[in-house]
Length: 477
Image (cartoon, rainbow, N blue to C red; front, side, top):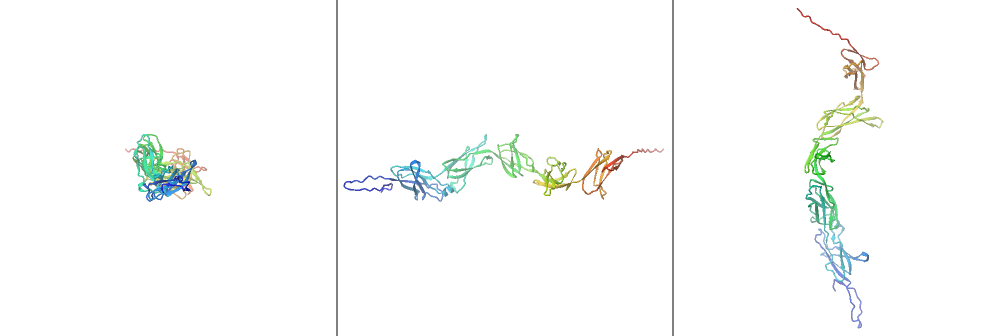
């Protein structure tokens, strides 16, 4: 019997009147195919693999005709009746997931008519190609940029790991890839920045196009001593935006190759010298903060509108006085209210700054605060408390300017404060502490100054008469 054919069993009666047997026709024909072992991952082979067979039915449907298993050489054979068939060479889910192993064609199609098929479906490992494009900025040359590819999951043998390729004239292609998920990455070449430098692609077909890489600008490398913000503008042009940078080395993506002016605006925290630098593609610029913010708060139970901070030496922008400071009110749990006066200034690193608060009717503790400016900002460097003091006001009648007003505290022989009356003959002393009572004495040469009854700290001023005496010496004979 020929193993390429299958004949149905036929029952026949042989008699003198029936000397001939009926015709017998083959109802099945042998079909053989092969799975190639070339290029299969290590640890896998073409032998022992299942091949699924399906036969075409009416209405475009397919019905299972079972499965066959390949021999040691990857060959398989099956006896099938005439008809339309499709077959698939199987790989396990683990092989597909970890190695990207699939077979092509998927499926293989063939027809059986009236003869065997010795060299039928032939399966090979699926290999894919991936291509993509680079779009560089207008009016700039798109160089040969290196593009790399790596599988997202699973393990590929060293021979299956794709080597990086160069994008020639803005186009690249990877050939001979196993199906699966990959990350394709474009090199920045140290200068160019891209809208996205990595894309995820899935290879399911013979040829796949990755999303394009679009250049958005050029990298500017900035070494900064402190975190800040940078305004960038074309040389001599208007600002094109602001970017934040961190301390250390940062890379900004600027829209062109330059030259650009980069200006460190800081926040309120740092001052840079120089604050403006020039950048061109390929260059690294350095920003160094030379001054830093110093701040503090004054706490008081009183709200005033004339509170100032006197500064020595002056701030980096030349201010020797801050204010008037505006208070914010806080209500405590007991219902008491406190007014906070916050302030800040910028001073050179290494300087020792004297901060002295002043208000017409407030006393401060401490009177002055010395702050050494370090290498970073000190928003809470100084804290003062303030309380309302005693202010003594008065004058002379009639108005006399230049009268010395001395304020004495009980049991002290030296005055605690001295002022002179102004052009209108009035004075104001204070604020003084609560260590009173205080007495006020007025004095000016050529005047008698007497307290006016009922008018506290006012003095009646009477000018003394002047006698001019001219002394003439008589000459001796």
